[in-house]
Length: 379
Image 1 (tube, one colour):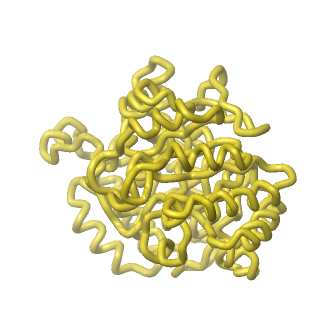
Image 2 (cartoon, rainbow, N blue to C red):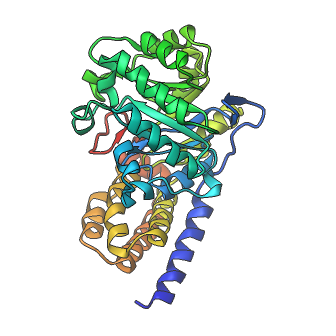
């Protein structure tokens, strides 16, 4: 396929995706200030490794996310000018406000990394003290620092001292094995945090069980800075419940948004007293095609197509005949073939009556099912 024809196909996919994507802007009347940065509305997109690439952030922000976070980046990678690491922080003006998240275990390296990240023009820099995965923890970073409050405090102080313009925030879990979130929150506030996000699970829990929103409430009662609640927000009702039960200032949506960026539009509609927009299967697949088209604008064809596969799994999980569809698509390395198969599949889905599809497949929007797991993780 010649480049001109592919460009036309990408433009068409983006146009169809934009038409399919519900858009409900955040409430302009509700503002939370993180340092000097105003965040309007109720719900922000969490940093998720392997998920929060620039196209996905852009789609979520357009749908109605109040702010978006990048994938987390290594402070070592930033100071070493690692090109791949730096590419993870590329963003568009339409995504603002944008928070970049970094992790590290050496205060001096974090200091240097934050200065470089700030120079890239982001609005907020967040320091990760919550990632539970082994490859981060074994480097004494992420949630491993919850076991070492003294070092955690020094790392965060270094980040704050490095900042000249941007507010610096922290993201934590409720603890390592036991809960010490209030202690950690007090430390980061004392060291200049502009806000803190709290995931209501310990590192030992991973993503099992249910998030303890009581920990979020306890942190909110302990500190004076804005608190962002995180954990098990898979629906507009859950977002409202978290705000009501914890008193947190914002909710952070992670796994609930994978393959369902329209969740932000649904949350905003619910808080506005409106019926959340329903997104039918054909629309979902059209939004997925737009996601691929945006990836293809940024990456080589093969890299974009292969990176897209995990997203397509989220977009189509539970859809009629989706397993067969995914097997066919996952054999393709050609963008032309993938887009053609997506178009065919969306036309097939458009013919299926929504009520029949829900009855047959028992679908209630399982992209919001907290039991869904994958190699991707929120940080």
